[in-house]
Length: 295
Image (tube, rainbow, N blue to C red):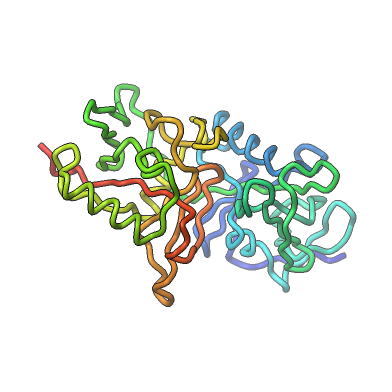
């Protein structure tokens, strides 16, 4: 089978990574079928991302499972490669041939299911996260941003006695407890907004400029190197200092430009984010404020 290559979009970096110039993403050149010789469960994919980050694969520590939208960037009808069964997959041959024809994504449905994607036919489908009988491969991804050299004397997270946490990397201050820890229930987007407004009326910790986070700000405290337990006792990943028992998801202030009835919620187990109806009482919220100008 002749392999058809796309021009200009992909760059082989020579370190088992491939840069997608169009979308400013970096992929691992090899999926888990190539590196491990087998398919893996979704939870094993999470463990693999954590391991690659601990080892700083190719010099980076922000590898993750791709979102359902990102994985579709790999599929090009005009591209041709071969999978482990010798069948055609529509993936640029800059990626190693002999790979799996499906990959996990970070999109989940409840606690049991996650979405996988078929690179032969541009088809997405749900699988059980722990399905050993019908698992998938995964190809890890990272945002192609330059990671700063760590200063050994730099203290990123500072815990305060007033129930707040300062993030010196982003100049943001967070309320350490989320709304679930305060209210013991899930809330809608409007209720999340009201919750934050209530903090301002009370001048929580002496401030009146608390707000809902953006999607990128919520993503900034997602840290796969630091597992804690959520309100159900399951694992989520938060920057050091945030207490256990919080909700696994968080409303953000990021509204859909074409449909104002949708806002992004962020998931602290898998780093996933997607649009949800504002009226759903199914998430918490984390209050944040800009602390750059604080004395």
